[in-house]
Image (tube, rainbow, N blue to C red; front, top):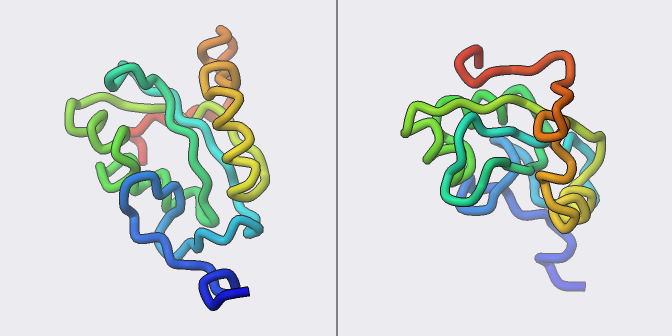
Length: 123
């Protein structure tokens, strides 16, 4: 085991970082895997699937344009997003769900919006 295996690295908020401020990228860390549904496509993307140890703070970061690359572009264009679905779990679950494809997991795309939707404007 190397030192990098023993200590999780801090999230820098760069491309592909799905964690919020202070979250670690430890694949075993528990938190929340979440799916955002965009009001308009960003390129071919209509969803963002991420993980965070502090979901409320992470959603606020996305809503203010400090989230992932796709949500930054969405907010810059004046678009919005809604929290479509959440799962308790860690980065390994995020990876597993990403392989299944976010559109297949989205209740909004399936025509049944869940209760508790959070538009970006309210964050």
